[in-house]
Length: 76
Image (tube, rainbow, N blue to C red):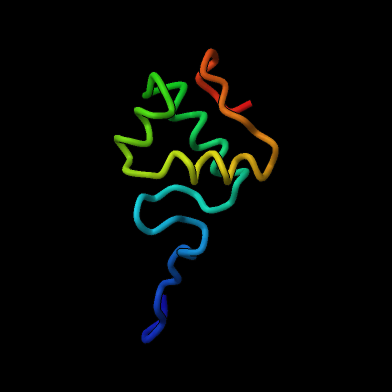
């Protein structure tokens, strides 16, 4: 890098500042389903652990026509 040039940082607009969850609903879907599949037994457990609002997650993913299926523990 040349003198005086600053390295560009990743745009903050892609991530929620408080908990590092993606803002984009499609990216959020992938992120949440991965976490549910690999680390959490329920959406409630994920939200409690990550300190995010379950209602906000449901609302954002509902905006792209995805609903939480408790049996599958995934948004489908």
